[in-house]
Image 1 (cartoon, rainbow, N blue to C red):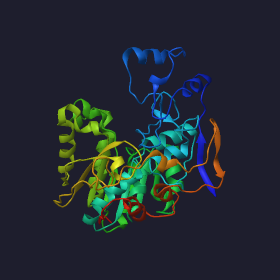
Image 2: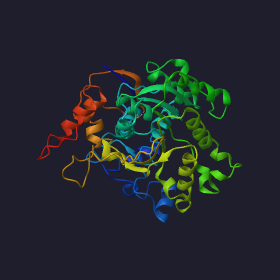
Image 3: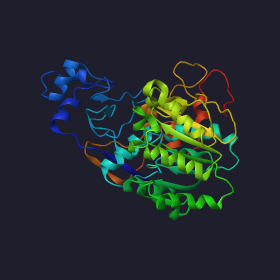
Image 4: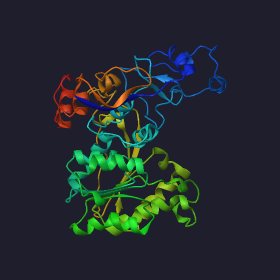
Amino acid sequence: MKLYNHIAPRLSDLEWEMAKHIPAGGNWQNIPIHIPSKRLEQIRISGGRTTYYGRLNYDKPCYTITTYFNRLGNSSNLHPEQQRMISTREGARLQSFKDSFIFYGSKSSQYKQIGNAVPILLARAVAETISPYIKNKTFVDLFSGAGGMSEGFLMEDFNLVSANEIEKHYFETYKQNHSTNTAKEYLVLGNITDPKIKEQVIYPTKHQKQIGIVMGGPPCQGFSTAGWRDPNDKRNQLFNDFVEIVDSIKPEAFVMENVPGILTMRKGEAIKEIIESFEKIGYSVNKPFKLNAEEFGVPQKRKRVFIVGTLKNTNINPPKPLFSITNDSLPNPITVREAIGGLPKLETDSGEFKLICDYKSTSPYESLMMGEIDFKTFYKKSLENLPITFSNY
């Protein structure tokens, strides 16, 4: 059996000495004070997040997978039992990428591709929620990254029309994993602010009766100051291009993904301006979905915001949680053990891009990641131990 991207990053001698003292669920507070580290000295004086220098706990979801999950001090990225950082494949599984999804480019690029991605099962939940209101199950993916959003929508039988990404390594991963979903010339590498690139992305939509969804996560840093009304703030250019493409394609709906901080930026004024910009081009915008990834099958504590608008005045409610730590009628969130427990053991600074090995699933989640079962079967299996029967699916 082939397993891709199961590679553990290197630990320095100092990091190795630190890691030996950190138990499962532990952090920087477990590192003896005699171990020399200027950063640790500063953290001890000023206090620091309990995720710093952390080791994962097998029996809980992980913390947010960042773009630097190869670094010991960045977050809780130590393997629960083995003396190493989690591998690239383990990071991908914690983001709910299936094992068949292969990452390309440099190691540092792969970390960023995974850390920046929208968790697939979170995107799937959004796709499932919107699907009943969409006649044309097609989508255009802007700022596509490695393809987290696309994967979630493909799981719900949406069809990819075109996609755009500016970063060549991200794009290579996207292209390699999605070239069978649409014509290669419709997977466009380049700057979306370039009129030629924009036209390439829009061109295939002209052959469709109507596109179902245009989606993406444009940066909105400029909204922290004067907002989109300031034409001189170049930080908003990508957001303006996103709106322009939505206006040009006129899909049935748009989906814009971002971080939760966008809701409180400038005391709520920023989100009002974002909604206003879509209303000006004819879209009815729903109340933003603020979602926790662990409630939708992702073994990770990660929050994201989705802004959904439709050409018709359609009220779409957020997806209902499928997993919960507090609701006894729902299964508990997926744990780290359920996510990566069956993967082959590794030493630090070891592994291969393509590993020939014999590994087996140890949980329904792993079966889903290995392609042995589909999502509905995975969720039904997750419900099996509950005292009463539900008809979620």
